[in-house]
Image (cartoon, rainbow, N blue to C red; front, side, top):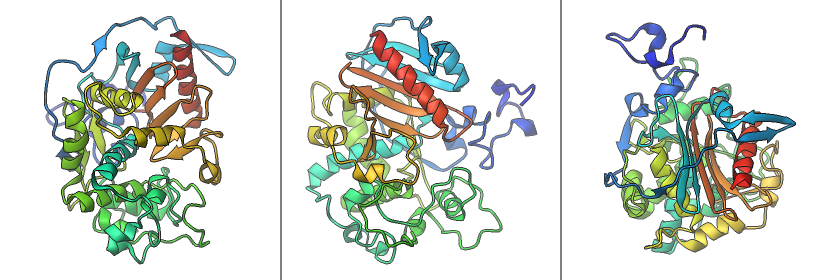
Length: 402
């Protein structure tokens, strides 16, 4: 957009028309650089209680990566140029428990809450791992045991394990282009999008949408094929609420955020009836996301307490059976990898594993190098495989430099 000044977004009394952010454009570039750290101004949210504290959770010992060249597809690029190219808002590197590099841009600072989209799924999985141990949940239990309202949907006979691993058989279409009607209904039901006039029977809320999830037309059994479907992770949040008889955001606070020592403002988006978007609606600060990511690298222990069961993390890092993951429509990301409990195994040589959200959100962990990286961005494209591959090269070169 020629002559567009990003720092003028939502400034003024009144705000000029071309600098206004609303539901129709909040995920569009360049408005997203503002909206991704101001979600609560656009969509109803609930606070995830934390305990504010000015003392950092980690020691900083900074080093410069200004001259680090990234080798990618026969080209050498400077790291700082890649940050700009990829619309990076925050980039943090932790090595052996010390923060060694940080970068911030646009409207994001170390304590700014920034939406993390599908990394929310990975945090919801961590929470479920805690609940599974606390309540002795059998992961092979059927979803309808907890949510009987789903008996006549795609979730009939599906297990919690199927939900965790994205191999429920359904007719849902995850379409970030916004063309698929079922995806439009999904986004509208969460309160994320304006309801289009030409769409009939839009569900009145997220749980009503989940209660109408269509079964697969080919009658493929659950557990046969990896099929990425964000609503499954919203369903996991609903199951958590049924098990604990409490709101998702309060459970997330009590069992994960507070024990982990998170301290900056955090929130999650809600539908019109107060259902949490546990699949993609969490906003959290860069420093707090790094704290959680490092906790995962350390197998759920912060050195004082075991917050997340070690066995839960060990399973999604090292589970070997990837038949379902390889059996997908278009395998582009991690052709030797896997998807387990809402975390990706990369299949790379150092057993790296990660969490990924649209518009350029990453948790990247290299256990062999004791390396944890987080990235928050406001990229224009929801998914761009070429940009992802470039960032994987960034993670690799940073690892090689240590």
